[in-house]
Length: 360
Image (cartoon, rainbow, N blue to C red; front, side, top):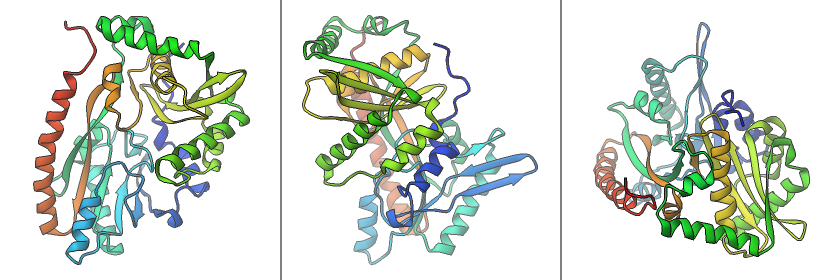
């Protein structure tokens, strides 16, 4: 299959952000008030998403301890400003521009954010999961840098899934083959659907499973509405795929992906019952096969999940930048982040030792 060179980062497409707002998933009622910023200079346009928030849910860079510390000292942490893709812990661009982004644009955005923070009495601004290039452009003495870790699958020019397995130790290779064989033993077949191939009935099942997953996890229905998924299915189908598990000619499980020219993004999954290894099949192995088929460089299967390591996903650093208005709290948070960085670095070093690949 031809590599989709025309596909931009999906989560900053106007169609994606508009679907979040049109569907009511992102709104003042849900605690995400859009106040996006745009710079216009001659033929150049730069857009940066910005939200005023009164909570820290749906961000995946956790600052609850910071909010608690403010509260314990009689100060208000909320509202705060955040530049991120709501409910999406995927690294990527945080400024969309029709020309190469430069340092001056980022300084202008930061100056405007600080001005806005004074206007709305926000305690802070948080830039979450920027790409490495935009992270470097935004770094500034006024900002604190925070590190995190995720587990991504990296495509080392594999010809197919067997070629990928061939890079592993015999023990891990056998483990994965056994897990995949168990899907066949359960009389489950898996179909990969792209764009318009995903019918309304499949979307309905997917959304019921999405709600079911959140209900089991935390008793909520999830952040996103059915209307959101209907809108992206209609407006950006060329960047959406879904793996569907089928048993007795009935779909029983779904895993949703989005993709661009370089990366496959695993987003949500759910199942009607407990089927051994089906989660690994739909969320990991089928995603890896899709990434190889499309010639993508990486597969970002979502936050958390150290069990990904033994299945070929590698630890990668993620980052965020933070402007903290209160000088004493800024100093305290800076000290905390230095200690946290040491722990993150140690974790990555240990995780690298758990990878299943043959020693070169």
